[in-house]
Amino acid sequence: MPSLSPPMLHHTADRLRSGLRARRGLGALVAISLCFSTVPALFQRFEPGDAVGLFAPWALLLVPRFPWTATAALAPSVVCSIGITGTPGGGTAIAAWFALFVLLRAHRRPQALAIAAATVAGDLLAWRLGHDMVPFLLGQAVRLGICFCVAVVVRSADASSDHEDHRENAGSPADNLR
Figure 1: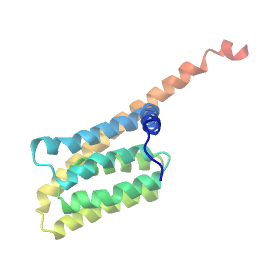
Figure 2 (figure 1 turned 30 degrees about the vertical axis):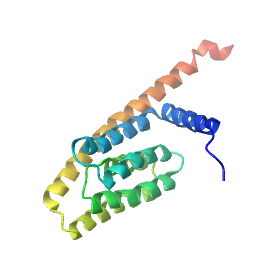
Figure 3 (figure 1 turned 135 degrees about the horizontal axis):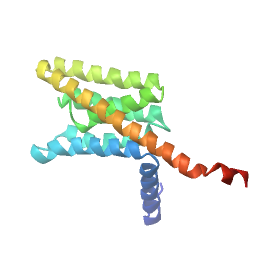
């Protein structure tokens, strides 16, 4: 069994930093999801759903390269977060909605369908466990709309910065002739 030696830990931290730098938009979505995970823990008591919410947003970084792995990490987490703990706006659900948007934009419809089905399954489980569903679903719909608006802005800003980086690296037409 490999040990976690300091060089291995530094290598892992370097890979995480390079992953966040390469995908600035996803990094912003991870940060927003982590904020939503920590806010309930700061102002209320810390619950198991909050603990899951601290780990689930990191799955967003897996979406571009490993969409099924990200889906496998987020889908059960969102069912537990929404259904069992009854927190529709926790960081886990918000990370799942951000992942849903990123997956739809990348034309990964089976993975997006799996996350949407997990959200519906969490809602059905919450209903079955006796949560009051009217404010639950209204709050969830508002947060879903806000998440999609934030994801659109962040991803379009990320795409425009990638386009500007491409133009800066392209040089002038005279440079291409040399």
